[in-house]
Length: 490
Image 1: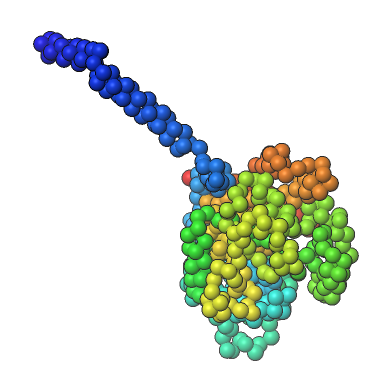
Image 2 (image 1 turned 30 degrees about the vertical axis):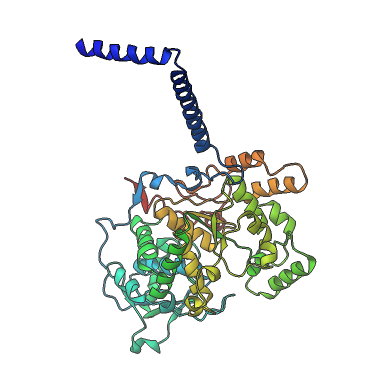
């Protein structure tokens, strides 16, 4: 109480001093009040500045989680261990030789199918020969692209693998067998009877030779172990791929865009929208001259309306912008030579200036050893695509399916599959002046792709009404979505 009274007395004396009619006291009081007002308003202005950008600078871009996040696997995990019924491979004197056909990812999945087939047939697999006669004319051998030793050792508990046929068998007659596409396990059990008459069965083609569904669980899990663990890329490819991923990551998150706007793809699909007459004629001539492309007469307009054409670079730019990705986003172009070069990339680059290719990300010296080897270059694209924050394929092909399946296996990393048929309708409305690139377009595109971003689901079966072998053709590829056999709940 004594302290309270003393404080009150001091305050009274101070107030009486300032309230006295002395001119000095009045001056001090006014100065104190002015300082208080200045202090109050200056702090109010500082608070406003901290929340509002300067007019002379663009507003900061806030990363939106829905653009990048993939919910950390959604509670699923890899499940590839053999069941208790799985037995070690037997030491047999029957051999399977294989010529893998197609591009990189067609060969990769075909090789893994042949691993499973060798297991079913109780045969020794000879390291496959790679396709050197395809469109890409790549002379690479198995060991140029893949880690051969790792492949053999990783699968030693599943099948026996040798680098070449024993010398005593090399000159003997062998059965040449074109395996049926999407064949069942029972089919291969029957075919294995050929080993009664031959020591070696040669397989001229390896792509899509095993069913997507209705196979024993141990065979399906063996396919996953083969593709995701055993069939690793060779060290030079792995090393450069990892280096380029790190360089991209140094700029923040990035999108890997599998831009299938390449000469062979446009010719094969018959898609000429946006091209001039001479370009369209050139692509038509290429298709007619390529013997193993069976479909020659294609209506380009019908292809595009049906959603069977790759998105153009301009359409991809509109699509990504409508989804909300900011202009500063780094986009890695996982593709070969873009048809028309920079001419057809201008619109995409105007929207997203940070377009990156292997040739701009790596040095000439780093790329030197991969020159003229399309499959090795494609392997680098594959690594960068699998490790990207977001993967976007402009068309559904072998690489797009393989990358999506691998990203699902690694925890359902974000993969956005454009609804090409739905998007074409929107693009045409923009071109006809019926729709603007605005918040309305963004809303439409976002809703259209809400369930097309790589979240967990079971593999699709065949299309309704399909019968016979056509039913198998329309099933979703096992390697595009290995759920539920190789991906399961915790």
